Image (tube, each protein chain N blue to C red):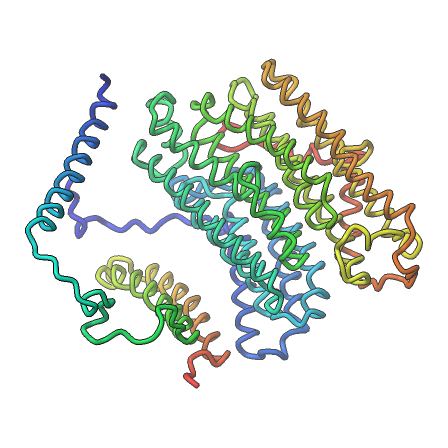
Length: 121
Length: 502
């Protein structure tokens, strides 16, 4: 058996063990615990309060716009934090680079603002 | 390998400003269009199309100076290369995009669709394609691919109030994301094998590992499959007809030409630079893709009653021809170079004739309001010039001399037949049979336009606009010129990749 196949064998053994362990514990639990179903118990869990309405609840499309705006700032932060910790090393080059980056992202924000997407009507 | 990051000195990357000038100009024009939109809103509508067109022409200026300069430029440790191949492909992208802008102006304005954003997104997508032509590293390729795809997903759904356009957008988005995921998985495996994202290093690592290593095979299959989605090769073509039909027709033209060419660029670069030594893996794969695309595309095209769907299936069949030279590209001794220039030649000619055919469809559909083949009947009686143009484009697509498509097919057959490889001859035979089948449906459409009577006897002239006329003119002249004087196109497309030692 080649090295390659042997290393896959390890994976198969571990996978088998994982399945076995999980089913053993779950099976053991279901054997040992008492089983007394009430209608209350089969209600969906919703943070402790009784669930309301259908599961196909629609949410306002505006949340989607705000999620997108959030991504805009999120991406900005992901790149700005590492840059900010090493600000002095990147010098003017880094400053100009970051200014261009922020300008392009800001275009997106200005666009949203000008198209009245930031307003919650 | 514990490198103390804090003591690592920062080296300002060397940037060849001339080398990335085309990208910078495109970025600038794209930002300008967005700014104009922000400031003037709807008042800017009349000028954004002109801005986009001028921006694309302005981008061609640094491209020409780079071509005149002629030296290969390597930036960012080899991740970004400007060589003959990338310059020619950038020129094809810019010209196709320019024609698409010409085709779009009336369509977008008359349909009352968002106009400023349309051109901003179009330029962003073109920028992704232009970057793709230069990218020589997995990360750059992926970023370029997403940059060119994401605006395209939006543009496909641009006919906002039309359900079919929405469906097309969603379908294209889901299929595109799925293809990206598959390809990204292949790339991650490749990175695992080689420890580098540079295509050169991957080429060395793949050669050292040998193609018998299952991981390498898997990575190559996944990556080729991912790009097969992008170029709509059978069996990864299912999205194409629905998306082409639902999308605004200029966007369809853009997808069928520029987006497909971008997929081919990435495929060529990856196959010829990153895995030339694993040719026993990708050659059979490409062979199957080519034969299946030609055959299935043509067979299904025979039954189409909608011209756009017909063009979609014809595009799938053409993909088969374009990808075919790659099936014999792995034998060394210049076979890679020959396949490369055959594919680039085909892409250049295909761009002209396919955009031309779409231009005629857009013009005629403005009058008839439908893209059914029956509504094209009798076009000769009220639009003789357009009918002649459409006939030229259709026969060029079929590969009849002396039109451009003939030379494109000739190059493909020449590469297949001179490879000295039995499978090459078989593929050439499959291609020859398919050329005959393709002629049937192209000629049937032409015959309908020439010989049949117009539906309802409506012989009112077709409304023409200057921009549509110039788009038709550009495509027609290029198609004819490349067919009558093939040495013209051969001069431009006899390219080499810098990495192939050209």
